[in-house]
Length: 65
Image 1 (tube, one colour):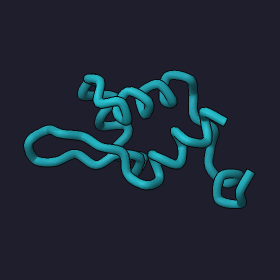
Image 2 (spheres, helix red, strand yellow):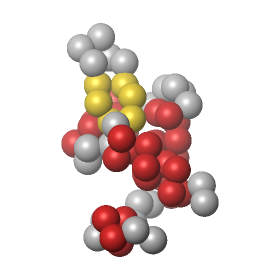
Image 3 (cartoon, one colour):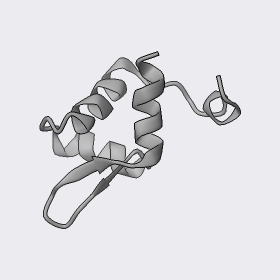
Image 4 (tube, one colour):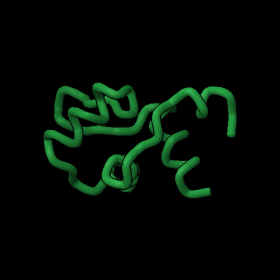
């Protein structure tokens, strides 16, 4: 585990699934999207498109190891 990973709270299975869904461009609820954006794991465009940030991609990558 990297130093930065050890300082972050572990994600719940539901949170990991939200990030995987965003990564796979599957629809997520407004509540899920808002959580990911507020947590810094996703960015939402004005047109509603959502994509993972670098931090979000790192969390998805680390959860699949």
